[in-house]
Amino acid sequence: EKPEALQDRPPVVTILGHVDHGKTTLLDAIRDTNVAGGEAGGITQHIGAYQVEHKNRLITFLDTPGHAAFTAMRSRGAQGADIVVLVVAANDGVMPQTREAIAHARAARVPIIVAMNKIDRPDANPDFTKKQLAEVGLVPDDWDGDTMVVPVSAKLRKGIDDLLEAILLVADTLDIKANPEGRVFGTVIEAKVDRAKGVVATLLVYNGTLETGDIVVAGKAYGRIRAMFDFRGRKLRKAGPSTPVQIMGLNDVPDAGELFLVYENEREARTVVEERLQQQQKRLASAPKISLEELFNK
Ligand code: GTP
Ligand code: MG
Ligand code: NA
Image (cartoon, rainbow, N blue to C red; front, side, top):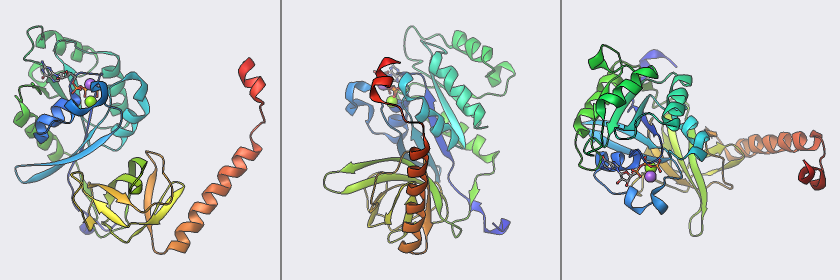
């Protein structure tokens, strides 16, 4: 891309942290909604994508599950992020998925801001939590370190502005740009089959501007975008860099984490997908055969 073609885009902020430390409640507080209250068993099981405006600037948020089973989602969430907000409950401190989240952020070379949550709880221990954070290499800035640790209560909706300020401050130190006129690509956040709508995929646009009518290839799926919606379910015609969108029109369900690209025509898109499927078939055919009996006796 020519440098002058690059423009500022909203930062993509992924929320990571141990199960039940308050990630979804924090996002609810930021968005002033109540998603956490409607979740089955209060456990997040997918990546949610949202946008908010703060001081006339857009921020894209990805919510991830904290349950131990969802390592791959946390890893993908960190990889697609400009900034990670690590939620650590001040009554529980640094826990296994807190450490895991830090490792994902470091592997992806993404800066971490700590949201020290649940400070309203009588058993909250902010100093002890900071000590634990320092021990895993996140030395708080008020302890002469370089990690911003923002005390918040997602439940009482306290400290939210401070957290948003911290996010914008860190965003300003980074090069968060894309070319809205350039090649259109991004990743699949999640996809499923809806009884009424067919294949519905949530995409995050990294570069270019995705439009209704575009022909998209995502992994083994392709199709022309029939309709596009923002995270609130409102119809959209165009989606620029850092915008999460739901699209309808793919012929199959792509895997989460797949890259998507826009192609000029449907024939080219179909060829790309057919070649991918053939290669997959070849790999399967050349894989050593193993019988079910063998599998069960292992
Ligand atoms: P997973 O996505 O399942 O990992 O959980 P989560 O990190 O999204 O946590 P969630 O928002 O579901 O909150 C877990 C519990 O902590 C809920 O009962 C919340 O009401 C509670 N909680 C969240 N934030 C706060 C807070 O600031 N203070 C108090 N006291 N409780 C909170
Ligand atoms: Mg959650
Ligand atoms: Na939860």
